Image 1 (cartoon, one colour):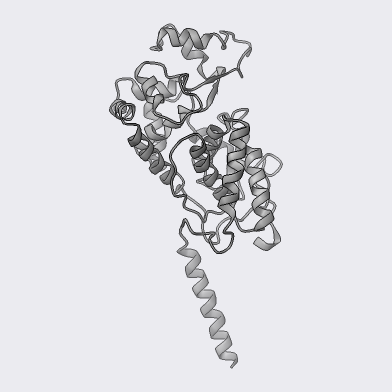
Image 2: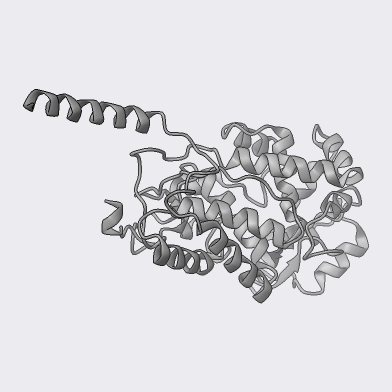
Length: 327
């Protein structure tokens, strides 16, 4: 009898180890353990975007900034009390990345109904999809089952996250390193059809006499972005798409063709280089853009996820705290 029990123990251990090592993302990951999680997230996203339209763009960007550093592991959500290498203070995130409080609210509600089950990384991935929908953007099937990291990496964030001064070659190399191709780069850049940018990120473009920016657009943007060197007006906001700033559409690409890209890192996508044809295609075919954007978001969400027994399930997204039920 004892030998049978011992055999059962080792069989169970081995079988469980195999399952963990072969763990994969799945859209039905929480169907049995927390079936109401996605509905809760959707409701709270609807409320957040209704309260502030800009939040849709912010949450899509936050997911992007998570996945490009250490993979999609919610490392971007850890604050400096959790780790001194917090990515929140990386150059590309500091005083720029936002939406943390929205993710915290969703996590708190999901923890209330299903403690220790749903990861912050998955909540962020679902939030980005639902935010797109609230801005009249495309939807997609979110693969689930990510776990949360116990570390963050400010150095990697500053090395891997795109900058508003990045060249096209730098963008392409960066995306290629994440398994994303040139078409993914252009499609994901199209998220700038919604949202706003700070004056400090486009001041150089609108006051550069050698810039290829359209004259009327330049003048309009100069109205709320003074040409100073003392930091005055750095945080003043301007819509990335002047025409339909809160609507997820293909007007971003029309803007680029008309030399009305607000950020230089956007305008380089239409500057006589290999991405020009994709920009033209998206400007003429909005549905193609929507499909490609959705597909690229799925690919991005699959960047180096922590699966199985890797990582943890944080009970508070900004900390390393765990619910005892998840241990």
